[in-house]
Image (cartoon, one colour):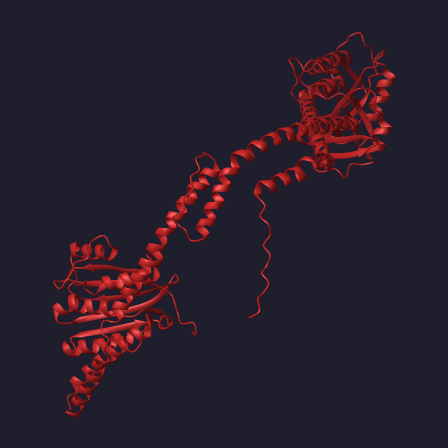
Length: 607
């Protein structure tokens, strides 16, 4: 015999040797390179965080500006509500011909002052009527209107739109003499509300409310900008810079950096990087204005450098601490792991009495207890499941199927049947033929599972004897669905059920009917046996169901042997298929009894 070369087994290397090598090779040496590489790849995440912060800042400022514009818009509607004690509503003051120009001017300026003092950021309020006449009021009474400049201003900015509301970007208020204050203007056409027609078509004039751009400085001051960050408010439609937080933002540079339009913005927000600067913006709803934050790229680069230096320092400190902790870990966990390994080798060799003693309150202690419990349970499992239960199952099934094994009995019965036929005793011959068929069903085939059709054929043979015995006073009805006939069930499942129905249900009455139904419902084979016998009371029914469930110890016959019947069927079904299957009984005294047998749907492989 040629001796084969045995495969060389790799040399044993402990887990601690491997972990030490992995610690040195994968943690200590490449740690600095990995940290640097990770931070380079996460710069985008830091930038994204800065951009998100910029979105929050510009969104907050745009909301405050939107609120301010909304408040000014409400002030501009005041002239529709204004009413003089002697001269009626504003439209009556402007259209009444009997009012002198001086009185009309005083009345209009009185209404304008009520708007002026509603907000401290409002600098001037003036009204230009349909004849281009200017009515003006200002917080500094000494300011004098530059009539020529005011006329030019009014001519330039009067709109022909009905009920028009429009914003005029920042500009110097030089239509007042010796005034260079920067303001933006909220303008509204005032309609003649005397009638519905005039309210839609006739313009009394245009109201202008000048608001100091210092209001932007107050709003931006609350946002908490970091050093180097700047805020601009721009009119994108008119391509004009309305306000710059530090006065150093150039209008041309801003718009050239961002492009000619904002069609690339997303839901009112945008982000763009150009000329070493991050531009983050948010549109003011209800206006063509956009709030833009200018964030220098150098700010983020300083943040990157600071984070990298801090991380490298912490990384080196962590490596030192990890080295110390690893040495302590190796010493404290080495012995328990070796004990576990040795115990596993003993169990692998078949020594299930092996136990390991690990007195630690960590995972290794849990593993030790688990190993001990596993070996103990494994021993019990082998004894109970793989030995006791399997042998018990085989013994019980075999005991039933081999109750009547002598083959000579079948041959003798056949000889008696032939003698009965010879003497023209047809009833005796029929009874012997049915009995012989039953004996053949029990003896000639040792299968534990048979088809439902074979079981039903055996029931028919059995019931032939019953009908002859009771002179056809007891009838059997079988209603089996075709798709159930090939299902396989334990041998002699139905005969004890039918026999009980005859013996305890119908026989005491002397006549009756037993009906048998089969169907497949929800992947279960359900066999129902119903008789119209005497039924049973609740106490008897509860006693039988208790025996079937195992709650009540089954009674024995006088001979000391366990009665073969419903209990036997129940036990064989549960041993064969599990606790989810078996028999259930229900009964009503005087009406009859119902027995339902539930089995899994199991058919021949060839079918």
